Length: 498
Image 1: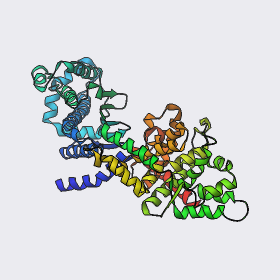
Image 2 (image 1 turned 60 degrees about the horizontal axis):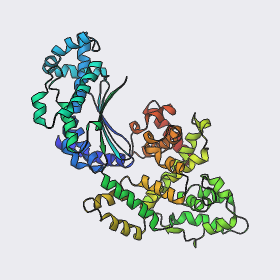
Image 3 (image 1 turned 90 degrees about the horizontal axis):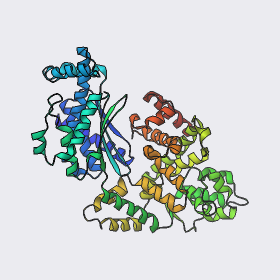
Image 4 (image 1 turned 120 degrees about the vertical axis):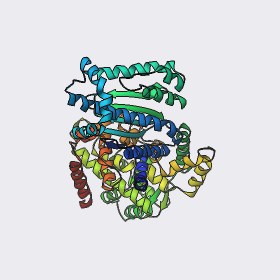
């Protein structure tokens, strides 16, 4: 059994790493929470914390996780128990009557009630996510809290400040109706041991779900190191790595006799993120708001284009067509094409100030950070390695996070700002995997880029359907995975047919 568990964890570790890298949610669902599932869930959380560089919190959070899983399971059991007994869980008298026998009845016949929970579709979910500088650990169940349960939770939270250690809690807290009543208080004390407070613990209940959330800060030292390295990396060299075969196509067109065939040049540039960026280096000095390939090209003379796409241009550094570079290059092309076509089919497109060319370019350029890292010069690698070692304890983690983990999105932002793009455009470029932080007025627009990215990643088997933002799914009427698969195939076929 342990061998099977280890094999599954080894398989899932890669998926967890990708999800953390892309700042996408990780979810696991169970209906009965058998022991082996609880062990598996705990191991997944530990891998997640390692990827977030907060592995020192494992010991404390393992207790919290077990307590929250048990609470969610008990809440679901309570619902089916009251239903079977013909009691209204929201009625004060029925609630009191049911709780008198709930504990003993369910302990002696738990398998029966767990089977009822399965049949009723009452689930328990673990949801993990890193967003910006916060880590979210959530336990969800689809049982709405009663007024009495909300009051009891609030009482426990209000009473926490009077206890300094576990002994005081064990001596003073006793709640026979709901068990020992220690869980919430001990969770808060656990959080306090690592410098957090009850503000880092939330219980939210709506018509669909009850969510218990623990909010942790990211490792500030690691993230500060990555931020510093990102700026130094971009500022170190004022040139762009460009795939040699792609550059040669553009160079051949601009060096042909007579006026430049701008249509042919546009076709080449439009499919290459770095060839596109080369134009903007000049254009943004004239118009800082420009974010359209057709407009950018129209602002440049033939003389300008001949200089930009010439081997003597000091702003370029040609690189070979290696596997990683080509994969990122292809990804950016597909996402741009997908975003362009999703925009045209968006019911909100008439409300956007930006046109489809703006959305296309977002899709093309938001892989910039990954491309720059994949094609870092020896000088850049040597310098950032030296810089990372200044952080004695975390140097290797900072370097690993920058080169192999979730620094590429941030690097895209830094590079775009360095090029001089408008700040709103910079935020649009990187907001797709953190829509909760995107301003309301931009959510629908950036949601298109989110869906385009998810379509491409899903087609490559990197992400799962549930990781797509729910609001974006609603915007495009994607009610289930089958409909999403159809969309992916349609976009993929359109791209291959162009």
